[in-house]
Length: 206
Image: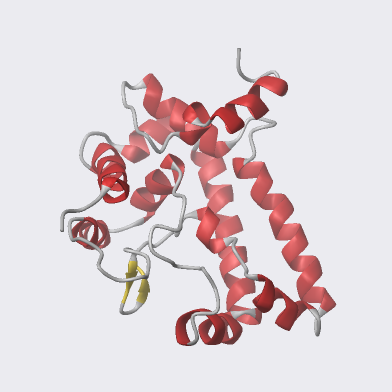
């Protein structure tokens, strides 16, 4: 069994970012450092929230009883900016572990990035980290309205970085790499008809 297109697309994105260019240099040259710093602060806030309110719930529902589609095989969407920011924040040993996982066929039902100690990404794809299944949300939010309010605020903050009805970090990272001559199938802000339409309607795409 050979590795599939999903693995190949992700491997190519990691190679472009990790081997063909200096991610920090490109980010800095486009004056995106501040946006990346703000995004990491946001992701840290998400991690604290999930650890505080959902750690035990998600372990029970997703990993032990398989009641959620979270971390399912080829079930995640990784944006090009997800890859770039993860590479920027990770030691080479962790990127090597990701590439080794992608180089192997995935015979199981779980995500290729799910290792024995959890996700192999240091800064996990935003789609993964901001996913909560209905049963987990019901279990927590029915008992704690403060948690529901905090989650709603985090979802609003998420849009600032990735929903392109205004200039966003994720779109800007793709643009920076395109400007430097790189291309990836994971550049959804330039390749997805839906996202391009959102940009066009906002006057951000000709």
